[in-house]
Image (cartoon, rainbow, N blue to C red):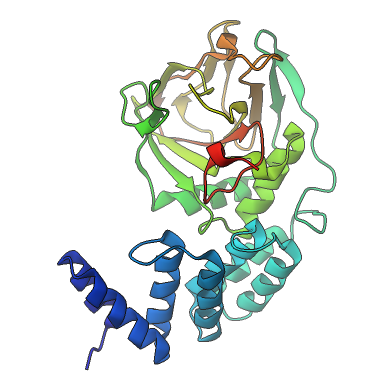
Length: 327
């Protein structure tokens, strides 16, 4: 008898016995093992070592959640809200969260934070904040306290266990690669990790930028320790059919030294403050890259800086197929 089918399957995978690993998980999932059902759901989402099937993954998550797995419930909530495998359903996701919150402290904390927001029926802000222009050439807009301190802490917490050395887009291929231009640590809050709080904040960013939330890349979170920086760069990408037309930066904390955002063309220096947002366009009206948007994240000299970035594409796209396969 296999007492821990998930550990056994992981061991089989490590030894290259993919078919045997899949058989173990499928057999135990059919027998009602909640851990095996959840494992199979996550494999089916990832598309490895089984074929990706988003509707099937959602059905497995529903089964695992009904068997009492709180992690499955949170992933299901994320997918229902962001439309993975079906039409986005904010109300349905919120109902699932309310149910999960009755027995799970994490879900209850998410609900409490959402309850402080004034949202429409689809999770957007009822009264979006207005940006103030603080720089020209490039046009840089600023919104004070767009996110609350609790919202900033939530984002940092969501990303903390995924942080890795940050990447940059290769100018030849567009692929993310290590580069000394960017020395921070980063994480991306992808579709399975997007809590309803994160999704509400992404919708808030869409509202203040006049875009559809489906145009936004997954929220990227950066952590800068002393000496780390992001040297001068532009956010627009080379050779893409769905350009990053707009950038939103949200400072998740303050109380550190250094770390300002500096725009080289107009010598604008933005000092970070918790919850403040900076918005700028990466392309000119004709669609060409606007080189005046070259900017840098100056070195942190003491303390730790946390930053969230939302790159907004020209057209909506599915996070599962990528920005180049835009709708």
